Image (tube, rainbow, N blue to C red; front, side, top):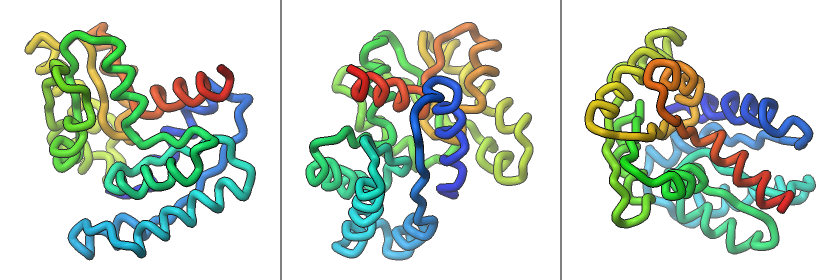
Length: 207
């Protein structure tokens, strides 16, 4: 999945719910491809590259860092240790925490299949979590068919609602644009990674 799909949803959420905050986007768009080329092995080079991105942000005056790719989890944890004086959030951290606060049966939807093999492990033990893949949603997004992208996500949300889920969580940043459609169709609370992260960062920095 292209990391560029993550930038707009975060910026849109910041503009909507925390417009007074100053933001900067730091992107190394070859990191994901390079990680895939070495079969997902996070070696010393990968750690160094991620740390350099964080150091650059901090040197530029960042008071908090929010990462948007969960494939680099251990690298992000290293950044959090190195820059412990500021909030450093992993991509799904805030949404997982908010889901725990909400409780009940959580329906987790992803448009990228491998996401459903990694994110569930981030939820607290005992979470009543039901997962669904929005088949065809990612392909629709890549070809620019936003309506089809949203419809695939809504259909997955309907199936989860029928299974008794009381809250829907959208696992990827690119899916955040579908939240209003899901809410309108089902009338259920919908969690997104950008909204949860901005909410938590604002609380930590202002609290």
